Length: 74
Image (tube, rainbow, N blue to C red; front, side):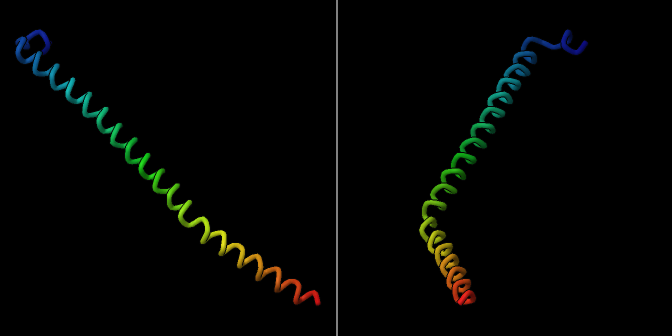
């Protein structure tokens, strides 16, 4: 009913608004993908940066456990 009473100018404005909304939706998804990608890159960089520190901590723990066990066995 309402569509029949719309003037061509109003119909054009409504179509323009729908197109703009569609682009904004796509823009939001693109921004979300970029943010997720940046977070993934930061996580990889953090793991690579702290890899040696984590490895050293695990090695110290393993050495301490092995030393304690061998002392108790003797």
